[in-house]
Length: 461
Image (cartoon, rainbow, N blue to C red; front, top):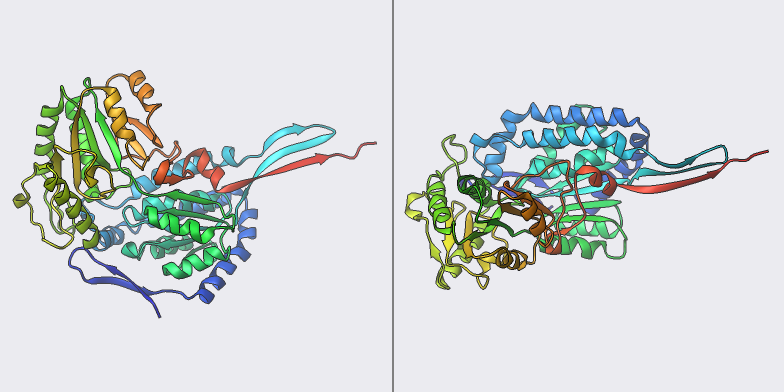
């Protein structure tokens, strides 16, 4: 029997473990979901919406348990609480637009013809969720999928092993049928085999680029629709007319919150030469004020990375950059780090360039490189010099300038004067190696359903 373990970044101990299901047991669970899905889809939409919102409410009631669990599993400091503010915002928004979004599109309703397009649920949706924002990222698909009439199977990352279990418990306690929303503990091979056997009607995966490739390889030839949110290397550009203090506060928080482990975290910065020196000085002051430590301590503002393996990659990128001429500005001795573990001091690098991995590869940790630029065109070229494209953060007082520049940036979302935020009214999407598809918004509902056309000619005398 394969055991799936969560190794806590706090001390390297096994925090939780669960046995992985074999293919036969998993298939039985999925078949039960498929058998129940049609009845679920026939329920009135408003009934489904209210049951899902009740599930979200029940999840909120578990905050006192969830917050320390997250600290143990992936290292986020307890002082920041859970993720339920964002969960509630996204669930409420999707509930509010569901009726209009899922309503039939009527082309004709006459004495002779009824012609319309309806949105039909896919069937069984597989959600493979990541560990960095384990509730927020999962809810992006789970909530609208259930509201739209799908059954949902969630497979959560081993690093946040208990999240799927807790989500399902909350939703079932609130009245969602047990077969409609299920948490399955699966290893990679079993997951791939189930996908290849066409056990799912839609798959949403959030994770690494290589993980996305594995999903696509497993699904090859099945024609199963897939939504992918993969890697990122999100840039920020501080223009010559930017509000300097606001830019520093937002971009540094965007780079280092959650120990830099954010899908749309800021990983590289380009600052106009007229503001560069002042920006760097203020950024160093901002980052030097963090307190690195045990995430269960309410005084801690920066916890460990979720796994020492992730920290090792950030250390490698940083040391390689310094060896190539970059300058590290943060004094590591100010922080209680460990040399080979998950506790990693935040770092700002200058004198960087795009020959360095820290400016090209996804870091997903508490390090950011800052480059000086002299024009929008130079910044544009550097921002597009990436295999990723999730978000970009532009800092200027001129919205027209930002929109004009944004039109040429290869990205999924253009922010002006903000960063590291997901607006549920807008489609969450990426380009290049960041993936394909889109979550939330009207488009999120469209991706979790399929169009079905009715062309009904009435018999006339």
